[in-house]
Image (cartoon, rainbow, N blue to C red):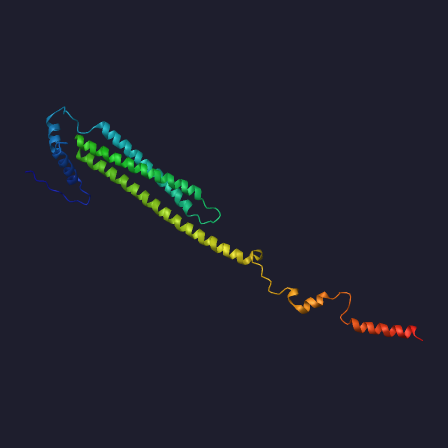
Length: 238
């Protein structure tokens, strides 16, 4: 029976994790234990299977580099989106640009997640083929974890930006409502006309009778007629 000891340091020790994977693959017929590969390489000048596959390693490094560049470009787009989302003007709101940029960023994150899954698949294939060393395992695992952490950070930042955008939209709507209410109060042309409360002239019988009289006769017409008759009698009667 082989005993193994685990040394605890301030760094994360992935040795146990590596041996666990190799032992699991050994049980299902994947690869031989690592210490047997090292002994075989030391006792044979030309082993039948190299310890590392250059082609697979090159593919892993290339894909990891592309994912890293993609995460960086996506982070720059998120920064641009954050600047647009902070605008508070009611009359210069870049709604269309924000919507288009949001769709692009979401598509980028989806593609990067798929690429990261492929990268981990390549890592597992190398382990299954036996073309893997402990150092290589630690390095590739660190690369995958780092890329995954950066992508999760970008996703979280996008969610925060969209939350800020939603809050700004609500604030815009409130300001528009307040502005519309203030304008309607200060503009006299927007005020509703007061309804007529005075009754029409024909509704009062006295006014109707007064309006039916000729406008040429004064209200004291009888008295004026008597005065004219008196003058006529003094002028023409002996």
